Length: 218
Image (cartoon, rainbow, N blue to C red; front, side):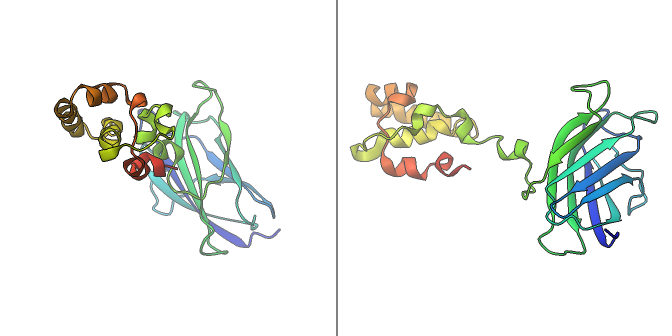
């Protein structure tokens, strides 16, 4: 294939101690139509020294069109004064194909012959989502909820248990609600207090449960 496609490659280095590298970094693009040969990323569009801690560097590379990008190989030659590198994310757009071609390659790993799994080359699958997996899953109420909360239970009149259950489930992210649920439990009496202390036993009302944020979590 001729080098008739222009790709814009944006590389984000992790914002951590020692994450930057001065080794030569290369990428290989893979897709159903072609494998894009190895390209060294050395000249940034801004002229900045690439792969510094916390920085996003933009490169233009030319090569054959690979179709819908499904993976990349990325690595470095372990040379230079400080070759160790922590790659966060690479974003690649096929400028020749145009809109809708952008793919994200989320890494968040070291490429270091002396650290972690000691790999200096990784194959990263493509993602259509700009949100990396480690951000998508953090802070979600679903993670602090007991699995038993998701068991269906008959609705009760008034729904006090359901309301409290929803509040309890939010405590991790909104501590100020904790005080109100404790106060409500005291006001409602010992039965509801026991339900709040052991949420699995609470008879959840259908409406507040269905509207709870974790029900809609991906």
